[in-house]
Image 1 (cartoon, helix red, strand yellow):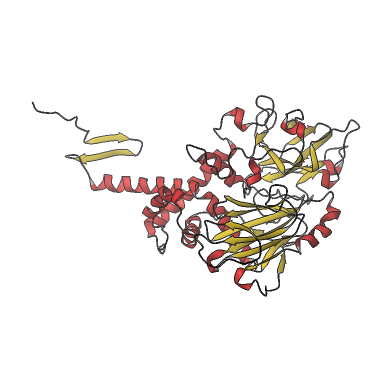
Image 2: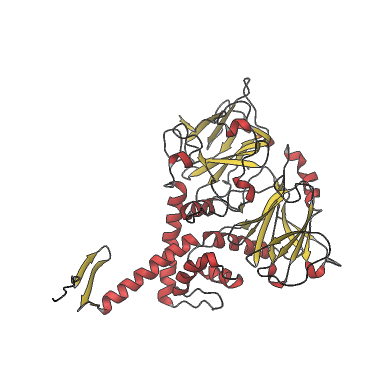
Length: 474
């Protein structure tokens, strides 16, 4: 018996156009067309997959450019400011942040009591909570020893909270929590008690430098275009390959990006990567603004409000069966940094965030319109609450003449007689509205909003306290 094998067509009409084969072998034109498409598709997926590293790498670069190093950190004494491009920063707390380069050995962090934050690897995966009730030192202050990947060297005799990093570059940020902005100076003094140094300098640590971000312009956003991949290649080289990344590292290798190799793309590859960065960015926006996550998981109040959960699941974005790649893309496009406590819901502890991008009618929020939103009385926040507006392109604080992109308990918001809050968002102050209850928006520019609850209380978790949606008014 002669075994017959189905023949593939010599000409295939596909979404890429006509693909031709001769005796089953691709023509030169088809070879070029398919490799061009393969490289483009791989580059787009690499853009989305690498967002956590690309974002944190750019943040680390900005810190170093501003002067940060082994004994120097950045301090935002007046909180984030509008001229500083930082993913979903707030104006409620003072910040301190820095970069640990572990290529020259372990680093020591001496944390004073009263700060709250996280230390991440360059993939935005949490290594340890810093401060707060979920930290090893439980908000009492303490000494942390941060070890490089596969460290086999000597260990100090003094007791430390030992943290093993799986990347050479680690990034941290901490906050200090005020009741009002008048508390900022004393909170900055607490931050100035912080120390960091190389373990090799432990006997005589160099003097700390606290670099002020106040009044400075800064851009801590992910690089765009070809530069996205150029800097990604450097970050890949600066950090050891990890087993969990091998499949995507293999894809990057086909694009000329590989650990231990200089990145030297030719003209064709530069064009491919530049186009992939444009499409990847557009896809990230779609994933962030219109995720395909089931509504009962995505929405804070399913079927009742437009408010969405900003984060859910494991802070490493792993599940028992797969990596939640779209949730990872959504979060790291829109926000930055993770902590182990993000997955912990304890009334009165930590913080909770919800965000909205549409008004009550389901239309995108836009700066030329006037909106009103009502927050019920007894906002469930033990420490403070705020509602902050962000530009949907930069994902940073909106810039306005008012000089304030938010309203909240730290910023002098006024309640109604019944304890509820009426808040307004528009290009001009509506007649009869208290200035402290208004945020100025910019016509023609889209924006979104976060509610932050520090020390979230039981009515938030029980869904007994439900904020209103943005109502568009004439």
